[in-house]
Amino acid sequence: MSQVFPEPTVGALVQREDGKVLLCDSHKWPGLYTVPGGHVELGERCEDALVREIKEEVGLDIKVLDLVSIQQVIYPKEFWKKAHFIFFDYLCSVEGNQQVKVDADEIQGTVWTTPKDALDLNIDRYLRHFIMRLLDKSLPFSVTWK
Image (tube, rainbow, N blue to C red):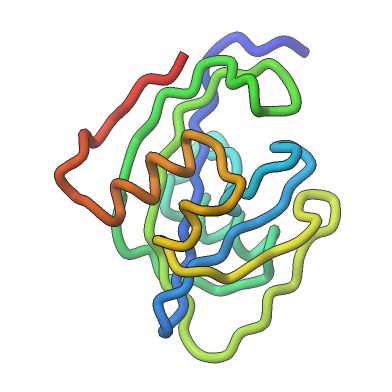
C-alpha cells in the first residue's frame, strides 16, 4: 500500500542513570544505528505511543522527559523503503537495572553509549541532529531534510 500522508513517528534517546543512551541496530536503517520507536496510532498521544513502542521493541519501561526535536524526513535514502515521516524525538529515562529485551523482528542489536561518543558511530543525519539538539539546545528545533 502506498503512503498517502506523512507518518508521525516517535523515537527516544533512552538514557540510563549513568548518562548513557541506548542505540539500536535495525534492518530498516541498514548499517546505521538508530533509536527505538515507531508509528503513532490513530487516537494515540505521541508520548503514549513512545512508551508503547519502547516496551515493544526493547522491553524497557520508560519515563518521557522532554521533546528534543521535530524533524521532517522526506524519502530518506538511508531507510529501507520510500517513506515520508515526521519524527518526534524525545529524551526518556529508564530507572533501575532493567535489561534490554529486543524484538528481533525490529531490532537486531543494541549498544549503550554516551551521547557524545554516539556521534563517532555509524549514525544517520537524523540521529545526528537529534543528539546535537540534546547536546546543544541552541540548535534549531525543527529541520527539513531532503
